[in-house]
Structure formats: structure tokens, C-alpha cells
Image (cartoon, rainbow, N blue to C red; front, side, top):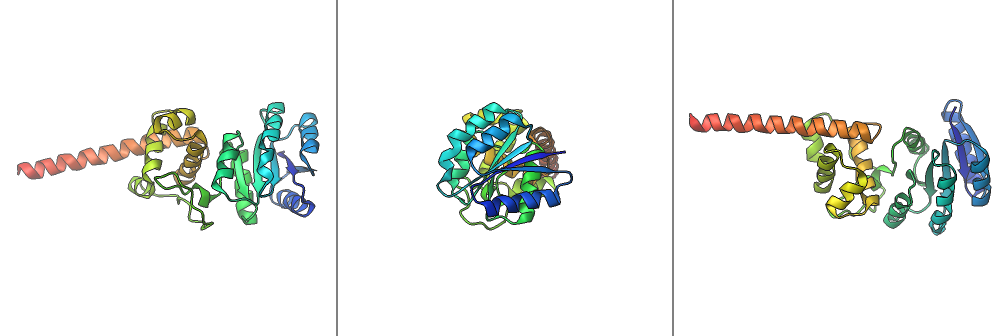
Length: 238
């Protein structure tokens, strides 16, 4: 039975999120807190699977306080639910060690999908925010055009940005997010967003599955390429 803690100063949104989770996730238990001190008390005294912390456009300054909650209960997963959609806020949230960033602009269906992803062990960011270009700039529009689930190896690689292909290659080699960030000279939080896009695009549940699928994907593409080169060579000889 999953246990949730919804912490939000806006009672209307807090009650709405509690009602949504209770209605749609079987056997879910949801408790509430209206502020961070109350949330910390609940975390100290209760076993909680996922804490959803609501913040406003200026509320992400509370991230340092929220780090204390993670120290109290390291097995609990934490996500920010924010009215902000700024790139800097997403990166700050992930850099602080949170497991997800959910926008209050998302639909009920998207919020439930986010909660399910985070409970399953994934790092979650909204689909539109996971669409990152080669310059590591996040899409500023909430266009819902995430990296789609793709059916063939060629489709996967063709739909990835240059940076995402680089992350995919290093992931297949078994590198951690920190090692990938160091190799590509980018922030670890940026690596996590690339990883979220890849998890969604590869249709896998976690990083381990993604690494396995990435290795198979790269091997398959290399084999096809090698076969094509041999065929071209034979034609040239003839």
C-alpha cells in the first residue's frame, strides 16, 4: 500500500491532489501537511513512499530546507510540484537530489503518470521539458511533444538529438550520471533530464533497463552498418 505525503500551502490544490491520488491509485494512503515543518514532523514519524511538495514561482528557495527531509528518510522519494516552469528551477530541483519535477499546469492524467514513474524508481520531468536540444537548452513551450516511444533502432537514433546520442553511448558503457556529466562537461542535473527523455523514448522503467537496451540498440545499429558496408564493398569489387 503506497503512502503519500502532500505538502502544499494552498488547501484547494492540496485537497485536490489528495483526492486525485486516492481515487486513481489502488489502496493509496494520502496524508497532508500545509507547510514544511509539518511535513518534516510527518516524515520523522511515518513511513512514507513519496512526498509531493508544492511550491510557487518563488518557493524553490525552500529546496535547502527540503534537503533535510531527504536526510531524515533516505528511502523516501521526493518530488516538487510547482507553478514554475523555468529551466533553472527544474535543474535546481534535480541538483538538490529530488526524484521529480511536476508542473501544476499538467493534466490529472500526466500528474498520475508522473507519480507512477517516480514510485517505480524513475527520475521524472514533464515531457516537454525533457526535449533538449544540442545546446542543452530546454524547450520553453509546454508543447507536449516529448521524445516518443519508437519501434526500430533507426527510428530511435534518428529522433535523438546529438547530445542525447552522446548520453546514450556513455550509458551503454555503464557510466553513472556523474561520470556522463564529467565526460560531456555538463551539469549532472542536465544529465538527469537527458536521462529522463531517454527513459521515456526507450520505453523502459529505470536506468538499468535503459543501459541494457542502449547497449543492444548500439550493437544492432553497428551490425547493420557493418553489413551495409560489406555489401557496398562487394558491389564495388564486381
